[in-house]
Amino acid sequence: MTAKEYLQQAYYLDREIKLLNERILDKRSDMYNITQMYQRNGGGKNNNFSAFDGILQEVMDNEAEMREKTAELFLKRLEIEKVIDSVKNQFERKVLIMRYLKYKKWDKIATEMNYSNSHLYEVHTNALKNIVVKQSKT
Image (cartoon, rainbow, N blue to C red; front, side):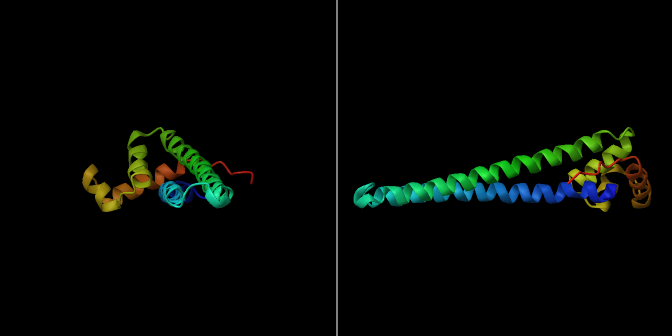
């Protein structure tokens, strides 16, 4: 994996974290709706409690799995941030942060930093050369 590919993962990690968090909120809403429906239908009458309990447990287990996955993704993103923070040149580091952690387009970065795109491309290329990507052992 190249340094650029490694850094680009941050964008996809953030998107996946956001989706998982939305799904967790959906699961909580499902749990609330199930609880309300259960209460409206008389609670534990007619021995429905075990079915209701099973549904709630499944929703809670699924939510726990999603929270665990979110934590794993977040740790991976923090790893990417540390790699960027390890770049010694402050200007290169700022370009990498704006590009890979704030997801800004080159034109926007050039305008904000008051540099030409071509100069930023050169800085970016040099910055990527200074990044060492650890190969995972999976």
